[in-house]
Amino acid sequence: MEFLDVQRDRERSLRVELRQVRRQLDAEIESLGTRLKMVNILLMPVLVTIAALAFAWWRSQRRRAALGDAA
Image (cartoon, rainbow, N blue to C red; front, side, top):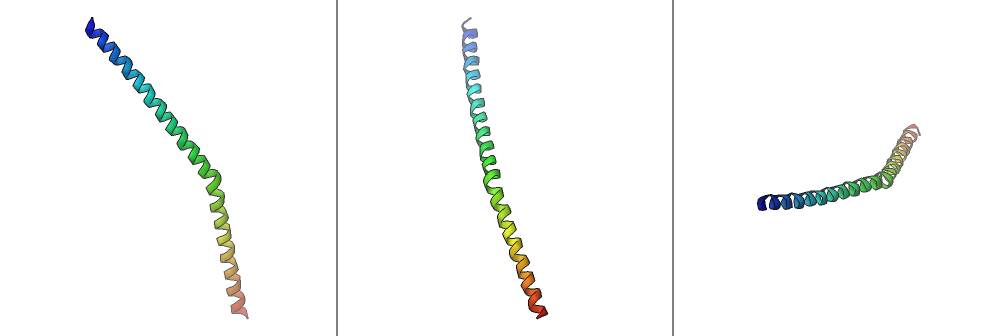
């Protein structure tokens, strides 16, 4: 009987530990998801703007070179 009580107590404590680990993992996953959303919301528009400015600069350089060759 005593062995069974010890085993039940051990199983209970393991279940409690497992629940805590699952909660921690869920919290970490949620945090990672939030960071990913922030990167998508903030960083992507910045990258698109930089790409658009670089493309505009490249086109203006091509126009200047074409006008310089024609003159």
